[in-house]
Image 1: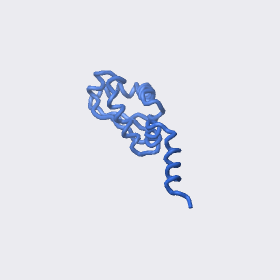
Image 2: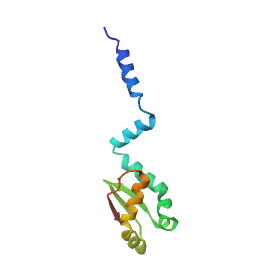
Image 3: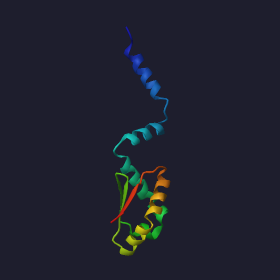
Image 4: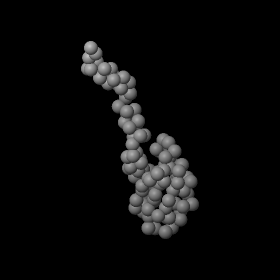
Length: 107
C-alpha cells in the first residue's frame, strides 16, 4: 500500500525547485491580471520615463491587449505624444523587460 503522504510530499518537493519569484512570474505570465500589474508599474515610473511635465498632464495610463492607452486633455501634449509614439513604446517595453506594448492610443 502506498502512502499518500509520500506522493504529496514528492510533488511539493519537486515544486520547490523554483524560487518564489519564479513561481510568481509563472503565475503572472498565465494570469489575466498581468496587464493590470504592468499598468501599475508604468504608472509608478511614468514620470521617470516621460518627465515631470508630461506626467503631470497625463490623466490615465492603462494597458489592454498589448495596447497602451494614454489619456490627456491637453491638445499640444496629445500631438507631441502622437509624434513620439514609437519611442514611447520602446521606452515602456524596455522598462517592463519584454515586448508588452505593440500599439499606442492617445485619447
